[in-house]
Length: 66
Image 1 (cartoon, rainbow, N blue to C red):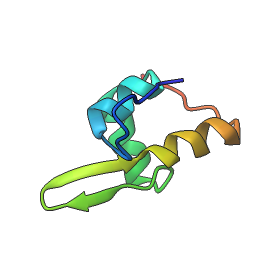
Image 2: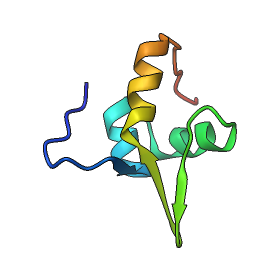
Image 3: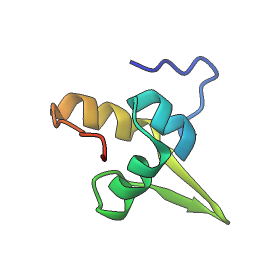
């Protein structure tokens, strides 16, 4: 699993995609579908690290778009 060593609790969409092993586009799609909870801070979208843990613990398979 993706380890955050700097103590942050929010990830950018790109960081979330890297942690999940999928594309940025896939993360945006999952956010749009309500599969991943995201927070808007001004114009920035951030994903709580707890969401990655929730997805990993759920055992739900995230498939790549093709």
